[in-house]
Length: 112
Image 1 (cartoon, rainbow, N blue to C red):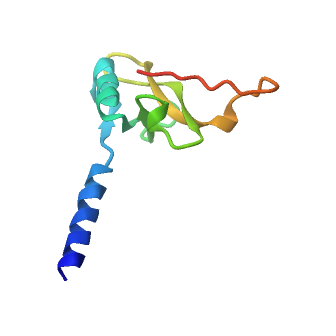
Image 2: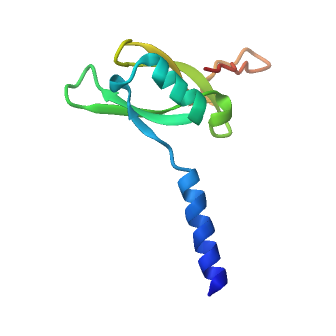
């Protein structure tokens, strides 16, 4: 019984550490969004669609490629913020999406 309680406690502790924060990017300044990504490594950013009124869009944005899954890399992207309609951030993309240069594929290493 004690062993079961210990296993449950460890699994709950680990799952809270894996939680990812969510933010409305349009309520934050650009530099605040970038600082959140630098300090937390990754976050979900939500913002309204410019094409479909009332439709919220969201994605996972990261500090660098180390915050991506294996086989992904951090690519440049932008999100709207309170003070910048195109705040520069990074999000993960599959390496397969990169253009092949013949004998090797160049993977950029961007960082915030």
